[in-house]
Length: 290
Image (tube, rainbow, N blue to C red):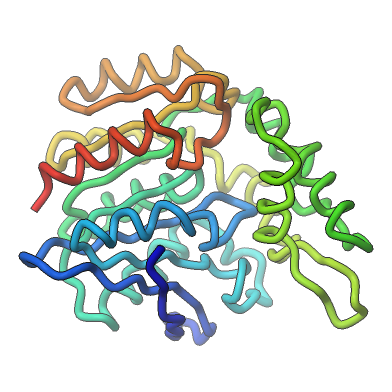
């Protein structure tokens, strides 16, 4: 498995932000890939996918969105919105001299990708939308809102794994104890008191609670149509997903008939993208992108 380099950059409003930079293997130059995680997650979600893509000769950047992982927490919770996040991604690309990239966006990361398509389509060469679209289910939103920002510190890795399992077992019924432990070590970090705290600012949930993170607007549907009309797009859906249910995925397929679609069996929101169905689809998709 390849290693990465930690890089930091400064947002337009002065926050110190972090990304993991995976060097692409040798060979013909290919467009880089920028991976963006979900609401309460961080760059480590791509620990397994990023090296697989880098081995194909593409540089991969896995971003810690502001307020998550090793990126600075924002003192103003009003900035935890897709528009601001999209600006951060554009800043990262600019600082690294990246004019075009392929985007892989999981859940909130997909909202950021669609927002970028509306604001900076020139930057988006192609996109993988992981279990997200411009229309989603209120059922899934309610489940996420019930836990986002509400997890406190715990005293052991066993307890941390239990927290992660309680939240995600409905979406990953086949996960075993070792997998939940791995997820816990991505999601928690020792704090100053020696306890294990979630690796995100609880205030990130405010945008979800106030509706600023809900993809229901006409503008986002227009951004999705623009993205899929002018760029190659792959939609990955977990077969058990309660956020992107069958009817929302069907709407997306009707709205974007050229979009590629794959469903991942026995997984809900959101696939880790290492499942055979998802990984195979992503590798085929990338093979057709410069």
